[in-house]
Image 1 (cartoon, one colour):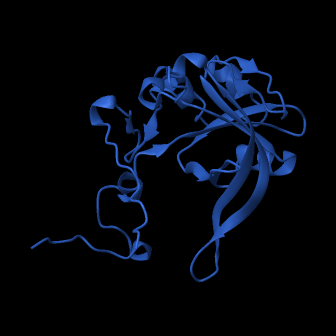
Image 2: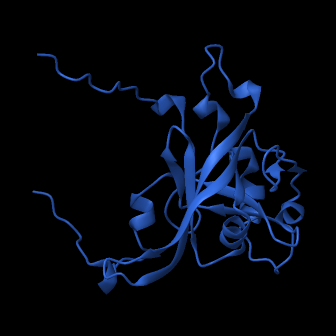
Amino acid sequence: MTTYHSYEPSHGHRLSHDPVNAIVAPRPIGWISTVSGTGVRNLAPYSFFNLFNYTPPIVGFASVGYKDTAANAIESGEFVWNLATDDLGEKMNATSAAVPAGEDEFEVAGLTPLAADLVAPARVGESPVAFECRVTQSFRLRTAADEPVDSWMVLGEVVKIHIATHLLREDQTFDTAGARPLLRAGGQGDYFLPSDDHHRFMKRPKPATR
């Protein structure tokens, strides 16, 4: 019979590290670039990020604390998501550092700002994939008791997509494993990579016919 470690999060987890972000893992990284009202570029990674709609494509990230990325995206109505890959891991991590307000994380990490086509924030020139996004919704998260949480959700419609052609297979499908996207896990710095060695294919069941 299975035994469980059970707890109410509001009363503490009684473990060495909060397990929630290790359980809900691995997660895609929201490497988000924005620009401030005064024209200062900002770039930061968010582990609370995902795709929430297919047509039109809508992505979103949650910022714990009203940080520059959330503030810039909400105020300007625009952001760019950049794919964080294994070879860009150290530079991505460098953009997570707390730097003085007004400092450009592109310069801090030695990354190339590449002009986007439809939005003001720059793309990461070294990243093989970028989504140009326009904000559709933003809101502060709340508890079940309707109390505000110090986290803000930002959703954006993807209005233009850039994909490096070497990541498109002969059948014109995207090579997910070949892109080597970094995926965030638990702990203070755990990451994973997808692998073709662990690829499992399952088609959605067809509706039963009568």
